[in-house]
Length: 391
Image (cartoon, rainbow, N blue to C red; front, side, top):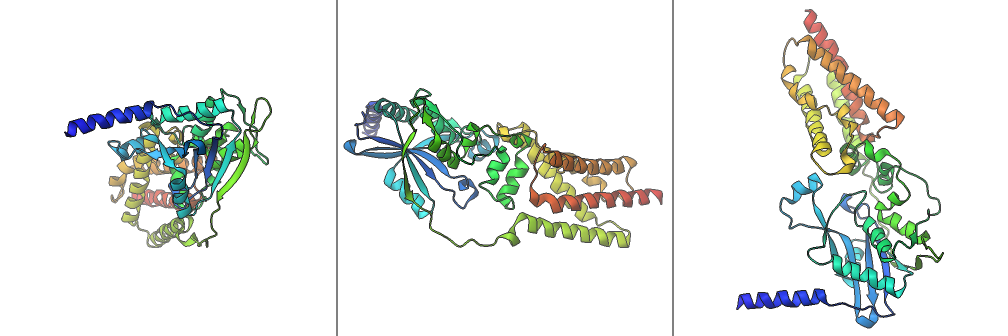
């Protein structure tokens, strides 16, 4: 009996997928733009298509931003950039209720499409929503919930869209486009700046700006079809974010916390210099910390498919070999080569500063106190070990 029911379910499912829904002439297709949320994963907003056809009792939303939580080895695939995202489908009313609950602005742009273009776009989404087509390999800058809106719109209109620069458009690098959505002095921004390399410090082309949902909204608003007509015929504000009190998070920010950590390192170094000794445990901690961070950076660079994590010069301070040097730190007298190694670390920090000044890579501002403390500590260790050898 169970097998028969399963068979019937599969038959009806296949029939449902195979059915062709013809949109009526009252149908409208819109792009929905959702404002940013509080968690880091929601900081960049969201984009989706709305298909609204009253004559067919149809009002659904398709979006390309759903995680495939059922994927085996979910977290490993996510870390390696091999995780598929899914096309989602939801009732418009439920979609809105979710974002109203989380107090996130929802804006709508009704597209100026011909009947055939509407049908083609809708058919494309229906086909994409089939189980065998729903997944796609997510890439933050070049293939995400926002870029897919642009790509599907272009396909459905046979590339009959010209994107024009919005008013007050200014060229930016990918990193500074991220800063538009994430405060520089936050832990999320610190993690992004450590994980992502120099490749995101190149200037993005105007179309590449559209990896962000808000920029999809701006570029669609000024886009035209090749006959000169506007792509968007009407804008609606479905929900506006309610004002909320903004808390001062400076005392829990990276700049403050890492600043305290740096002051503590400098205090220990000062005490060591007065007593002419070495506090071994602080050096073991620093070498372990920088070495482990370096290993993570190397993993993201060479063992993942994330394009944004390549050419990461955070390795100039998070030096991987530090993890192998921990055994040298407790020794009363070290070899001459280890002193040369410490001088090498100082040179690496100077190179990092040069990379930052000339714009090869922008580093997290929260790291500044820690980098200064590391530099001073390395200088002290060179001086201390030279004196220990001379004795």
